[in-house]
Amino acid sequence: MFIGKSRTRGCHLGRMVLTVLAISSSLAFAEQAAPPVKVDVVTEMVLPASAKLMGTLQSKTHIPVTAGVNGRLDWLPEPGTLVAEGQVLAKIDTLPLELRLAEQKAQIKRELINQKYLKNEVSRLSQLRKTNAASQFQLDQTRSQYDLASADLEIAKLRLEQIEDQLQRAVVRAPFTGVVTERLVRAGTDVSRGDELIRYLDTENLEAIVYVPVKYLSYLNRGNALKVSAEGQSLAANITAIIPSADMRSQTIEVRLLIPHSQNEIWASGQLVEVIIPIQAAKPSLTVHRDALILRKDGTYVVKVTTDSKVERLPVKVGTGTVERVSVVGELSHGDQVAIRGAERLEPGQEVIVQ
Image (cartoon, rainbow, N blue to C red; front, side):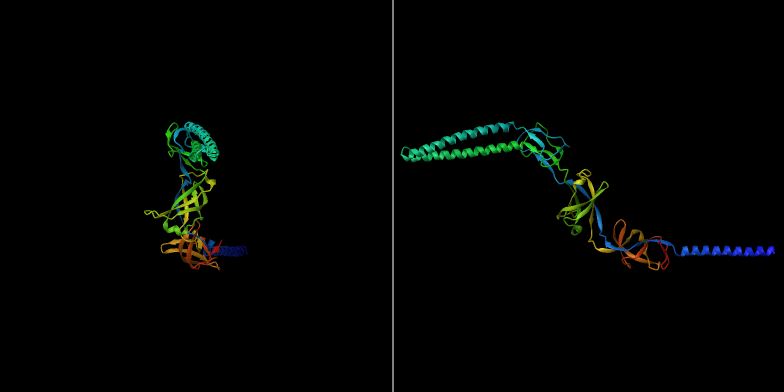
């Protein structure tokens, strides 16, 4: 009896082991038959093509400051000096002008005295002419002299204004806030009007200049915003000018973009920047995640996951793209699901588990 019971228990135990093994094999087969995949949705969106070009930052105003009058230069700021709008940029010795000013004021007094005398003389001769005590010739001659004296007085006053204007020009003031970048002469030098003294840079108004191939001109318009990057900083800069005069050798045109004042403390004139420009018209297209693309010798494919969790391998043509997404042309529709993980070894018609 004991031996029979042992055999019966052994049979039951064996059956249990076989059942467990069968279940494990079934699960393993199920897992092998339906592997997990991660999917992404096919999306119709505008994905314009773009290109990266190198541009250069420059100040909108970098001018030579010239002497306003002839004379000896008294003072100039050092290169690198920040000068506010209206502050002094250069001083020229004004002593010769001050002496000329005093002389001209004395000349005006002389002309006034002469004019006053002739005016009284005209009045006296006019009274005498009424009684024939003075000839008409004397009266006409005196009136002529009075008119000439009045004209000489007017000329003397205009010369006084000219000297005063030269005195103002002897002190050169900053037309805008900026920095002295170069000093061309030194104090004590005799200069003439129009001689360059320093070079002066506007640090508050920067612009980016980029040379764009002519074939992309139709995709650029004044006022459009382009992405500009440098030193880890990016911003949108508006196009302020497109100069449609192509360089004969490079076949490029000059495009200028306004840099916001907020970047003045980070970027500097002469610095290189990266500018992204459109290179074709922006049109809606079907896009997929870059990880959905399967590259093979015979072409590029994506794996579409159908509504019954089965897969189809579809050939596609890849177009333009961004860092994450690319446009594709193929048998796909907006809203379709394509595998982006675990699709490399899938066979058409194979069932999968969407994670």
